[in-house]
Length: 363
Image (cartoon, rainbow, N blue to C red; front, side, top):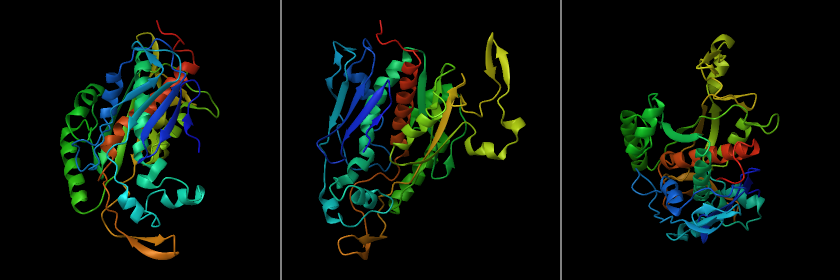
């Protein structure tokens, strides 16, 4: 396995879904950044199941503990180790189906790759549970980027084929925390909630689309040709277990445009060069171009559903049928919003440090 991401701001993830803990080690964070446990807890709480619509019945406290790298409310420059303990664990259902790989999960591929030695309870390392560590690291990255004026935010733009109406940045900031699905469009949010509840009653699940944005990003972040900004963002997003597609700016719609429509034409406003549109999503040639970075990720429906599905019994090599019981979300999109936000922040913090935008000691 390769459990690390980044170069100057590097994270290493550890822990399994039903193991003792989930954690993250952050190496390369400058010294002097003001951090307290509440800052990290605030971000982590965004991905908790809690009272969200049709969310998992697993209720973890997810109380952050800091083991190193922060002293007297400031980062020290040493590696930062953060963990949360797994407490509400029930592995009984997984022991029953250990030889029945769940459709849509990594059970079969992981068993073959690791010779059956991997911890399969709750999906082990392949569970969305590990993204709690991503959010812990993201909370540090968000604070670090704020010292430069860079802001990162994410919101739900579609669930179950129900799209949200386009909203301004101010509306997104104000509205995403006002409903269970983290959507800035209140009317669409209500329809999304109803759709998720319906899918849950039918023993099914829904996917959706999350949009991540970064504002006030300077020109020049990214290292072409093999270490581009969008390439690293894509790598970070695809580390989120349920992500199956992504695009920047106009994305796949650009393939249906003419060049005259797709090109972001340049102008000068208040003495600065800017573009009249943002079809490139803030990245040109693998480098940030000064426009807002806009990325959208497609999140698949939760594969653990209550309907009977065909599978195989790997112990006797025969066809079988599986009904997954356990505790699962009917839609993970609302909880994944915080994860998308964090992975974008982690990647941008890494490139900002590599570009010298952030000093190694913050005064």
